[in-house]
Length: 294
Image (cartoon, rainbow, N blue to C red):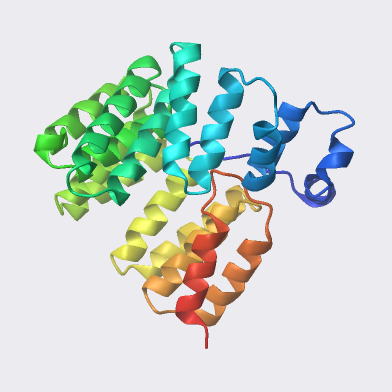
């Protein structure tokens, strides 16, 4: 997943103020669909959904955005319905395949034992189609790798498929390929090899904040807290307004039962930040807060 570029200083405060303008004021310059997309990007899924649902006709883009809103709100049945309609109208759209994979994957997680395998297999096919159509899409590649690492062989998972995917990515995105190999080695519990891949990914993309966060999180899980703290500081320096730095630093404190007061402050700061759908949801931050409330 690509990291976002955030503005700092006075420009940042202006952008934050603008983001919280009521949709009715923004409507002077935005169409209804653009308003809905803007609301979605600010994680206001309910209001985005209201605008889209009221439209008399819905093209593939509107149906895709409807599906993404339903997904983010946890209604995976309606998400798949909307995304399937979008796909039927658009024909070949990698992002629709990606979101369909996610929706079917969540349905598999919440379904009974008789229907879950079918949903899981459908999710895999959607992820594979998304990667086949756009191998440079890191989100699709990451979701497919997660599937291969998590699913049993009879559902199309397995380390061999994960390695094949990582090798394919090496030709188009070497840093991402090393990140994928790190996940594979971590699954095998070859932690030294996983660390070397993460360090190589960081060397190849030194200004990419996610590559720094990947290594910081890995070291924290291995109990190397001082090294992890230095990397979090480095990530903050690379992208001072990145909410993910705040969230994951707090998460590592809680997982290691360290600096819990700092974790509380960070999570309270996080829930007040303007977030995007690519950031961990506020509900996750609130759930972490409940674990450490005095």
